[in-house]
Length: 577
Ligand code: SAT
Ligand code: MN
Image (cartoon, rainbow, N blue to C red):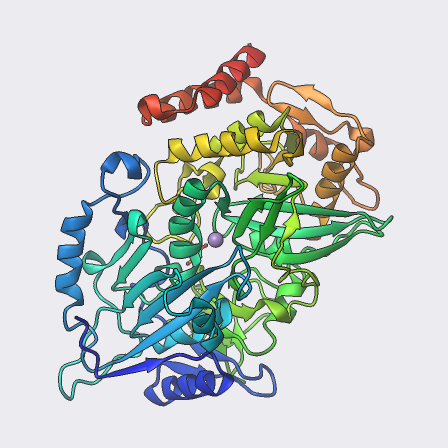
């Protein structure tokens, strides 16, 4: 159907990676960075039209629209396959087809899943080397008739005989389709070469398709970082936290605690697959092998562990190129006067324009993170003690709240809202409900997904993780950040750990349990008491308005809304008075 000129099987070797990157340097798609500054690393500039996920072109093509639900785009699968087959026919002419066998999760682990991505993008192939486990051993595990998830991808830009290629081939927006066929565990992506649109192991497989599998099979596929926090006594706590794209998951996953004696280790920064273990607790693995992190804002100050993860063997996309052939972006430690910007144009600091795209990314091997947890590849996973939900809210939502119980926590996650970011191209700058940070990634009806969360709680019973809601982004009336964030977030995590240990009390508010000031570790932090009070303030009137908005939102899901959710909403209403 795709009619490539050549077919190559990817084996995941370094020799293959070097050959592909050299090929891309030769064709002008990639720039090799200064070997002395950033060894074995490359910069790519995408087409300016292809810089982020495209939610309006992302489809859940289940048999019925009801199964996809009101938060997903839906096209009848038969019709969509017809449309896409037409686009795919001859789409790889003049190009090489790469066949990439990959494992999400450690190869051979019972929790892992195998995918095969077929793509005509050498950029995608190189990124898959870092983000997943690629290789012949995957095919060995697969054997003659093992189960795998077929992932078809094309940039959608066939080359006519003798036609010169462009540095970043892709199709126009109206021809882009990021399609999922959940009943068949099938992914078809056409027209984009960027991030989650093209690296199909990530959002497409590990979240949209996996969320369907997880529901069918009784486990969870979540948009969550995983970290291990170790207190001064050496006790370990495992935290899984869900925030929307570009809201600081990578920063929190690699946090360097500012409070003495506490240590944090990273297990994953984006996705968690969780199953109930033999002891009845919930165990999580990171299905990925790398970080596809937002570059702008990442610095030695905000996230030193990420900066050190990307010192070598990394891919950079839509970052600026410095005069000494290194990368740069807004918010990096040292200022930059002159560079080539993400569009390939001369740039100076005086231009007033951003040198890197706001959704510029680094792709770095997780194993290079200095605080990667020694158990990050343990096929059994780590037992989760705490769930954290949150979003980006400049107003209303306090720094931290604890759910009264698991069902209340599910309600908090389901009602989460966040101000939108540059991670998606087409969503505008607004506040939107983003349940469990899964709005763009839940591969079936969101109301059924909420029901699945409640069902998991019923199975976990008293072994269910404690649930907290956080907001690092609250501002004062004048628009100043009230909370310093980053490493200081360890103070909030400490309170959570002390809560589940039963070491500290809490103050009950209508929206949940909140810290008593005396129990919250602010030592060594120059935070005026007024700011702390403002951070923790609960404005009942604002939450009453939020309840009204929640009711309107839930109406979209009709009678599929789980009764537990309605019960929680009514209880909140009663508490607010
Ligand atoms: O482009 S990705 O979907 O991989 C990144 C993100 O939006 O979280
Ligand atoms: Mn993400």
